Amino acid sequence: MSVTFTRPHILLTQPVPEDTDRILNRDYVVHRLYQAADPSHLLEQEGSHIAGVVTGGAKGLSRDMMEKLPALKIIAISGIGTDAVDLNYAAERGVWVTTTPGVLTDDVADMAFGLLISTLRQMGEAEQVVRNGLWPQTSLPLSRKVSGITLGIVGMGRVGQAIARRAEAFSMKVLYNSTRAVPDLDYRFISDIHQLAREADVLVLAASADGGHVIITDAVLDALGRDGYFINVARGKLVDENALLAALTEGRIAGAGLDVFAHEPHVPEGFLSLKNVTLQPHRASATLQTRIAMGEMVLENLAACFSGKQPPHRV
Ligand code: 8YV
Image (cartoon, rainbow, N blue to C red):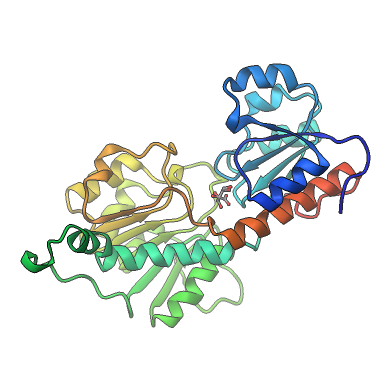
C-alpha cells in the first residue's frame, strides 16, 4: 500500500533495514533523530509537522517527546514491547500505538536458547581459551548438561510458549509463571514465582514489562539457588540488577545469560568480568529476515493510519 497524498512527516528514532528505509523515504518525509547532531533542535524545528514516529520496543517514545509533537497520529513500534510508551497519554491524545507481533517470536525464543546453552556449557569462556591459543595448557571445569533440565518460564505469552516448544525437543520439564494460567497448555503453572525458581534449574524471563515492576528480586534469585541459572530476553527493568550482580558475584546463583539491561546501552561494569555470564547487546530480534518482516508491518501500520484506516496491529 503506498500513500499518494502530501507526504506525512515521520520521525525515525533508530535505523531500519534498507528495504523499509527505501519505502519510508518514498512515501514520507523522514526525519532521522538518531543521526541528528542536536536532537532537541530537530524536534524544535520539525516537531510541529511530525505525524508519525517509528521507534523500537525498548526505545519507545517518552511522554516528554510526545508533548513536543502536537500533530502526532501514530507511534509505530518496530517490536512488541509497549512499556516505553505512555499508553494512557497516547490514548488521551488519540494517537495510535502499533507493534509488530508474531514475526519476532522465533528469534527471541532462539536467543533465549542460545544464551541458555552458551551459559550452561561455558561456551564464551571456552571460546576465549581457543582464541587465545591456551587450549594446550588449559583444563576447563566441566560444564552443566542442558538436555533434561527443569526450565521455569516467567511469562507465557507468544515468546514463552515458543521457548517451551524448544524445551520439549531438549527433553526438558517445563514449568511456568504468568499473570494467569494459560488454557490448554500442558505445562504446570506455578502461581508463586519463588516456588517456580526453587523448582527450576534455569529460570527464563520472557514477560512483558507493561506492569512496570521488578519481578526478579533478590528473594527470587535466592530461591533459584547456587546451582540455578537465569536467562533474560525480556526487559532489564524487570530485574533488580544490583541483586543479580551480587548473586552472580557471590555464587548465590550459578550463572546468567542476558540480552537486556535496565539502562541500555549501559551495562553495569561488574558483569563484564564475570565468567559465568553470557552478554548480548539486546539482539534477540536482530536477524535480517525478522527485521525486514517487522519493517513491513511498520509500513502497513503507517499506511493504514495515513489513509484514514485503523492500523492492523494497533494495541
Ligand atoms: C527489539 C524489543 O530489539 O520487541 C521488542 O520490544 O525490544 C526488540 O525486539 C526492538 O524493538 C528493536 O527495534
